Image (tube, rainbow, N blue to C red; front, side, top):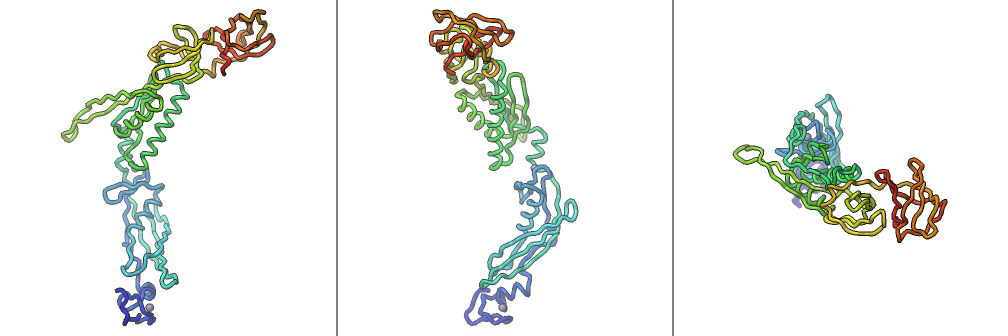
Length: 354
Ligand SMILES: [Zn+2]
Ligand SMILES: [Zn+2]
């Protein structure tokens, strides 16, 4: 093989490079440069379409892709030829049998020389380890999302779940054994059962950082396997349940949340529109009223000449209510529409800041 200056192709007389007595182009035409075994066997997971390559499972979009990959892997080219461009055509003969037709295009002296080969692909369906564990609700860790108040509002929970699922999907592209096997709604929050302790820890810390809270981690010995202790780890993340603009009923009275951090809330009293801070620890005892459901438009019936009080038509029940006007509230007059907060059958003027 290879070029020797005193050698020429016995077929066409060109000066090589030669494969035995002939040049590459003649070789491809006379011999079969493309080698494929008669049968290619593919182990394929019917759940996720991965195929087993030696000891590891490799992900594919569908069974055809897994089959193509297996055929391409089985192709061998006679040494001494340039690398060809390979293409493959699949014909499904039966549910689990394909005929694969491979074409190789060699570029030799600026000319294309083609060769083809065929093989029969036999697919063996076998659920991969990951899918069988997921089907069996396998988990190593539980991520518990809770709130500091009584119930987590659905909007926050939805957003949090999206973050969790996106994170896991992204990790899956690097490690296929990372998955969520179960999502369970429980009193006060949601539990996510995850296959990997390490990934759950990363995720719990990410969520905690976003919300400026801490993660509580508790391992639990669940048994022994092959002489090793088996632990399951629970990660608890308590999210603040309030968002800016929500209303709370605290012991000082009704307030609107202005700023929320992991430890403190800055709130504005709805009676006097004065701002003060409270510790988050007091939240479990407070009732939360989500902003969108409690703000109404109300018509001003009359205003005291000294600007200290006004009469408002309660949009629910159409009774007029007398309210004190907070100091910083802008000037209003009868007939005007203002925004009011309705909490537990009481009406308050919405702070004009919003
Ligand atoms: Zn030749
Ligand atoms: Zn699978």
